[in-house]
Length: 312
Image 1: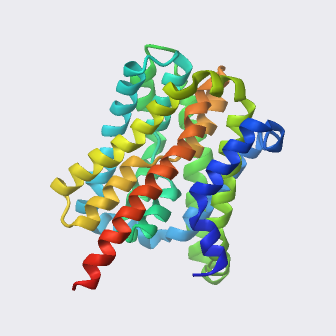
Image 2: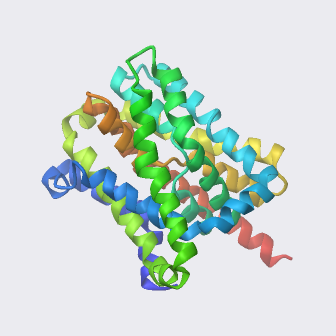
Image 3: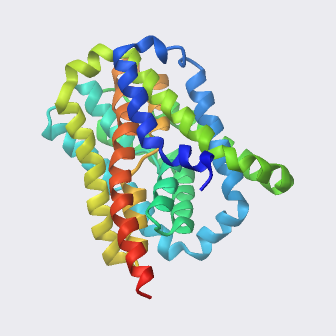
């Protein structure tokens, strides 16, 4: 394993460290704000498009029986879980809306890293992430408006436009670049995961540091609600995956995809479409907690999968 890979795989530690530092000294990360956040997310999605290419779009069509269950769970189980937890923990409206928003986001590239660390089905993980990302342009705005519309006026059109700009277009551009310039893209791909990790770390730390007082005031209640969202996604996603998909590794992959969201997208959508800055905070905290939950699950499943392979 190269040093670059080791640094990239330790992304939960970097997110946790940076977020902690941002609470102590917000100025360390507050400079990463304004247009830098959507630009950073766009770069992540561009690299994702360069990674998957058009062959993966065709693979989704071929393997739809394996991909569709995970995507369906992503856009049913998680949004409903986010809505229920907001009520259960009696979160203030901005935090409850932010929790629903991140629960309605697609899977992110971090789930592909966790699938690799867990020795789950990485190809299936990439296919599920790609499919949920492409559907996000409609599903994320629509589900957020349906579940949070009674609390606040949800700008569904603005959410849709921003999702197209920072997710769909960069992914398509990345796929076109891989198609037209495969050799150049192959040379860039080794550093793409590290760029994604650095950007996610900066986004999460910036939002948490900029809203330090509100995060500290929310305290354990908000943290526990977000932790339950992701832990619940893993548990329920795994249970559903065991029933609907064939094989243990496929069920693990479904759990990872369901339990981990594109938190960076949640931050961008929260900041650019809601007047209250607190709406973006659950997504920033989500980047920390889903990485930690995913890392624990990856450690357990890696040991399980390795022992099974050794007995074959």
